[in-house]
Length: 257
Image (cartoon, rainbow, N blue to C red; front, side, top):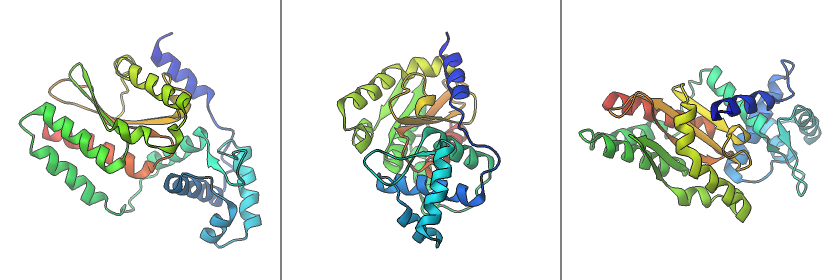
């Protein structure tokens, strides 16, 4: 079976068990769990959320039970708190894509300008410009940065990826390494066709158990109409910020190059 078909079947089989009955508060609590978990790398408890929403811990625990029943969050065995599932992250990412967010992220404009300034210094050399863009994404997202340059896959920031607490175990690190070994042929085979593509956790057919998300932008370059730039990091990350930066960088490279 072709890799693209494998990915399609995985995304179909991984649909969460929620429906249109999700309340606004449940959506807000899920978003808060995702965003707080990205910051502290620990399960999020009801006490923290109760303070955030100004309601009782019992109310939050009741909503968390419903979110868990929907398959959007889960409870690690050793903690009373909850962490997002891949399905929870997918719901959140889809919400970001479908609902235009006009909120100004702190420091985003400054970050975008920093990437543009760095890339512009190499605008006469496409390969160096792309590498500069990747290195900038690495610095700003603390993920592994990747880009296709002709037939080559450029990577930067591997240390960032393996420094995350999720990848402390040898088995987990090996799973990520296998994904990296197969990333270039997968990109050629699957040829993601959206300006921004997000593959979360088990949606990655070459690393289902690696616990990483691939966020990539397709753009036109002197090398190909299907050039890619993006980042690979833990599923636990600030999707709003990273997705905006990757999308902006792809569009910027297409314009400059």
